[in-house]
Image (cartoon, rainbow, N blue to C red; front, side, top):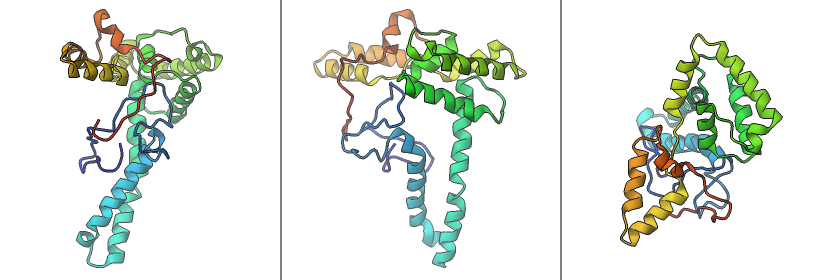
Length: 238
């Protein structure tokens, strides 16, 4: 998300530059012109706040005839944004880990996992899907002692809930997709379509209509890009 694609409804809609993050890295930025990382992944919350502030400035004459009063009214509302955003963020992250109640240690549990994911440079989507399916891939993250300790804490947290493991897994399966429109596959589909072959585009479209349930036939679309593939860069109008 940048600034010209945030709607008053709170949704973000853009045709480019846009992309999906593979390896979890809070410094991820895709736009070729954003060389300073203004709209990097970690900056999305403050940018949303900045966007709302600019929007509020345009509404000042409608809020109060006295400019100082109008500014104060706007600031009072805008000041609530960080806590509201954080509450929704952690609520959704709890679901990704099957945490169906609220505990004061949840935020640390979530943050600790993300730090481990970034340290070991693992795929965001596939990591949460592996947790959902009870799989433990043979990579540095899942084999590390730090993760095993985190996992132990996570299991203990789940056991505190008044829910069954099946109920926990059902929630995780409903919010952790197996497949996303990965940038390298989208690029391939576009290139083939431009050459007159729409088959890959049609196949991807079919797969993405059921992103939480991917068959063995389409499992290839869960694969992140290889190290040999060039970094993905997006341009305005992509």
